[in-house]
Amino acid sequence: MVKIRLTIAILAAIAALALALAGCGGGGSSSSSTDPASFAAPGSVVFVEGDLRPTGELKANVNAVAKKVAGIGDLGNFIVSELESASGDEGQPTDFSTEVDPWLGKTGGVAFTHLDKDGELSEPVIAIQTTEPKATQSLIDKQAAGSKAPYKSGSYEGIDFKVGGAEGNAIGIVGEWALLAGGEKEFKSAVDAYNGDSLADEARFQDAISAASNGSLADVYVDVGGLIEQSGDSIDAQAREILQSSGIDPSEATAVASVIPGADQVQVDLSSDLGGEKAPSGDVSELLGSLPADSVAGFAASGFGEQLEEAVDSLDESGLPPEIPPNELKSTLSQAGVDLDKIAASLEEAVVFLEGSDRDSLGGALVATAKSSEAADAVAALGTLLRGANVPGITAVSGQASGFSIRSPELGGGPIVVVGKGDKVAIGYGLAPAVRGINGGSGATLSDSPSYKAAVAALGKTPISAYVDGPAAVRLAEALVPRSKTDFWNAVPYLKKIAYVALGTGTSGELATAKLIAGLPK
Image 1: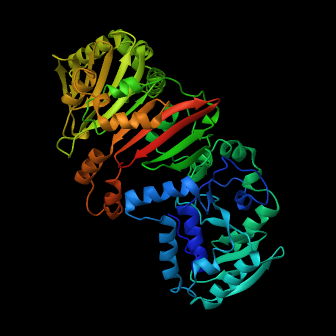
Image 2 (image 1 turned 135 degrees about the horizontal axis):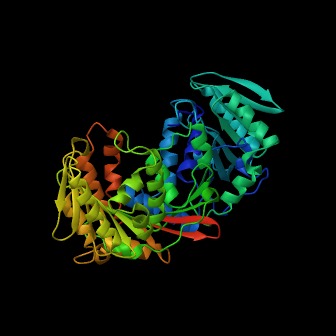
Image 3 (image 1 turned 120 degrees about the vertical axis):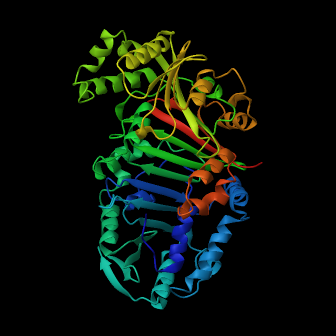
């Protein structure tokens, strides 16, 4: 959580506008005095650049989204009105139209230099472009003089600034920028970056931000590897697996996200340099579309066999103590007629889906396609082997698919079911989801759903790889999330405005690309 609270109220309002209405229409930045990234220290882990004066279609789309999601007709006017009314609480009341609008420039930037020890992003450094530095300085002086908490004056490298207030924040004019920082130390570091080496000078940043989309509302640069390193390499194992399954080495990657509002959707374009890994390929839209029509969410990926091979090798290397020593898992199963390497090599695509409206009906499965029926046969053989070894909780499954189920206290109420049929294998939480997944396409599917069709259409030429049914997902979350989680429940009225969320993935040269779209009511 960012804890900074700027006590010069009207400039806090502009900072809020920089975040709420941020947009970088240029699709990239260059290192110069007109670039807010020049205030970010080298190696900064997160940087946001924004257009403080969106116009034309961009502004119309921002207001359309605000109207549909929050019932606000003009988001910019709403924010200004709210912050003007609050400015008197900490300083002198300010009239935005006469005291700010005449000098407010087009560009703003927010940089987070590092992670704190508690794992939170550092206090931000905010740069706001001004067309009339003297007028901006006059407003700073007025607000500081009228602040309930005192400010003192300081100077650094020929730059005058104010520091103090309730949070000890610092603010001053540097060239054509109003610079706001969490304290005197942070302000001076930003000035040093501006006068010397900064994030804007780094080839790593320049390469990443150059891939930002034109006409966006917000461009966000993230040094994924830097965040992981500063967090003590404590990235969640599942998050790491998801990134790696997309071809991204998280320890080396950078990423850029561009937010593009539409009249009835919000689109986020993402790109990553992959950290030197091979870009992902493959169209999994057909497999995703074959999921049951009432699926709450689904995610499909190509190259599943390769990922499984790596997982099997890792598991074989570590073993399953005390029963199976290291480097004996694959050989032990091979003696029983189960060739894990051959099974993994035969698998191609995989899809995971979730279904249900409450805890009792919750279910889901992972379904993988194979080049032949060998994988399904191996599942049946593995079930026979486990039952023959009298492994507790193992039960045979037959009928619509062949395999076995596993029950244990650690798995909760429902069994884990592993079944195979034809050229598919499935691992499900419960028998019904596993069978429904493996028989995908035999009944009503996502491809028949109007909402899913709208999601596919919104992505255009980008093949869909993930889908969330907005209303169904909110209903399930309402049934599962306790009322004590107030952040979620406060967001529910807005989440209910989302018709669907769709994700499409692809490549552009050596970059992995993705398009995320949240559909809104027409």
